[in-house]
Length: 78
Image (cartoon, rainbow, N blue to C red; front, top):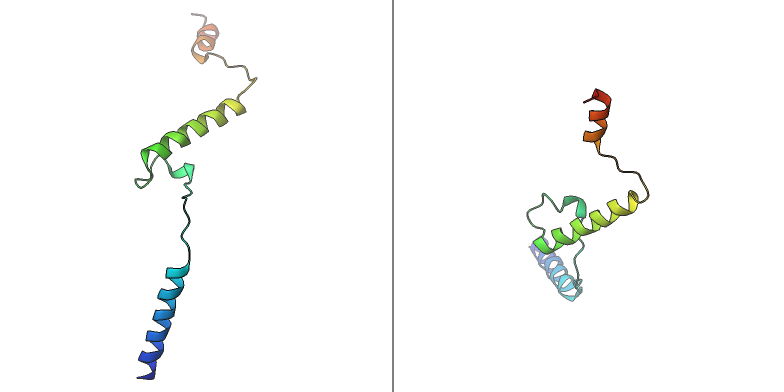
């Protein structure tokens, strides 16, 4: 009987603590999972794609982009 009373008191304390704890008003998403995870909203997926594109542009800024198809033509002599 004393175990049941202890369990009931512990459970009630747990419920009170959870009800008093404020929940955050925001969510954090991992963009690494945005393309395959079904629970991530489409708007977040679009924002992640834009962020990845901006990062790609920043990383490749000033690098020479070559057309590999044209380079292969020159090597083959065609």
